[in-house]
Image (cartoon, rainbow, N blue to C red):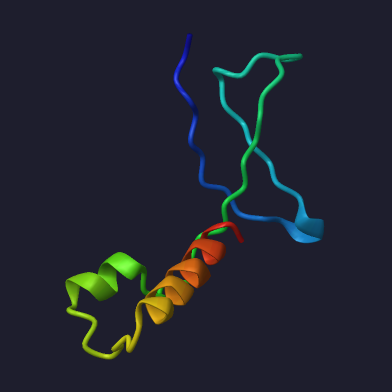
Length: 77
């Protein structure tokens, strides 16, 4: 069994994607997952934690839960 292929591609006009790899065989069935790359200016939750969260103070546990739910939801888009 071969390993999973990971390719970085650019969306072309009309939302078209092109993936080419010599390991893929004509007629082979594959699953393609699309995960957009975050803009360079955005920060992940891990970056904020490593920076000490100096610009974000949570008042309650509910605030933390709401923030984490929002972060997780952004991962799926």
